[in-house]
Structure formats: C-alpha cells, structure tokens
Length: 160
Image (cartoon, rainbow, N blue to C red; front, side):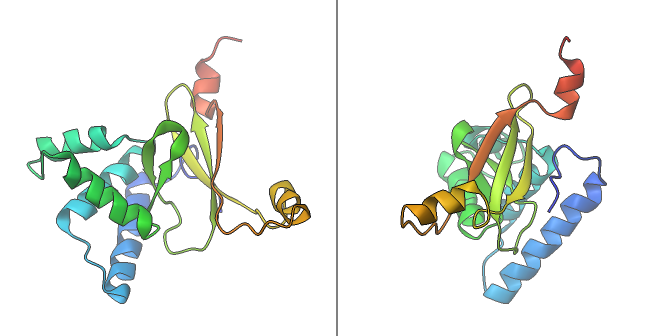
C-alpha cells in the first residue's frame, strides 16, 4: 500500500473509488450510510489532510446538513468504528481511510507545515515494534503509527 496523500494521483477517481467501496461494504454489512455520513466521508476524501470535527461541522452547516456538534461526531464515530476513517490522535483530527475494507495497520505521515496526511501500511508483526512487543510477552492487537515531518511540497518550499 502506497501513501496517497503526497503522491500524484487522479483525485476524482480516488474519491469515487473509496465512496464506492464504502457503499458496497455498508450494503453487504447492513450498515446505514446516511447522507450526512456520506458527506463527511466525501469531505475527508476531498481534503487528503486531517480535519477537526469543528472544521467538518462548519462545512456541514454551510450545506444545511446540521449545525450541532453531535451531527459531525456521530458521523465520524460511524466512519472510524467501521474502518472508513481514522482518528489522528496527535492532531485530534480525522482523515479518510485510503484502504477501506483492507486489514492493515495504518501509519500516518503528517506534514507539520500544511497538515497533509498520507496513509501507508505499517508491518507491525515484522518490524521493531512487533519484535519489542513479543520480547516483552505483549500481543499487539491494534497499533497506529504517526510520524510528523514535511511533505514533498513543503520540503520544496522550505529555505535550504
């Protein structure tokens, strides 16, 4: 799995492919993919950066889809709990999952300058984290790795 957030790609197809995959998974699993949940996912997919709940709520409010925080938080909770979005703990923000439906350990590459987020797959069982956990007798059930730095665009803008 390659990161999408920093790579050049067909953004329209990226959004449509993800929405189609989520719609299919919701249908197959009897999940309600309401208009608000869909719109929140569209917003996250469109941005390719971490967004706070209130940023999302502002967009929903402007579109007449809700003005109270629970509207955004309920949609985000649904998306995160079903693996369609992830919470970036470091930023207290959310980003769309670029690999919905795939079993993976997300690794987030977060640009400290523009807040762009790229999701890549970490291989916890084979890497240092997995080895360290096993040496301590610990069984990792879930891991999220967040790394902060500069994305390719911001590196080019930074003074040498």
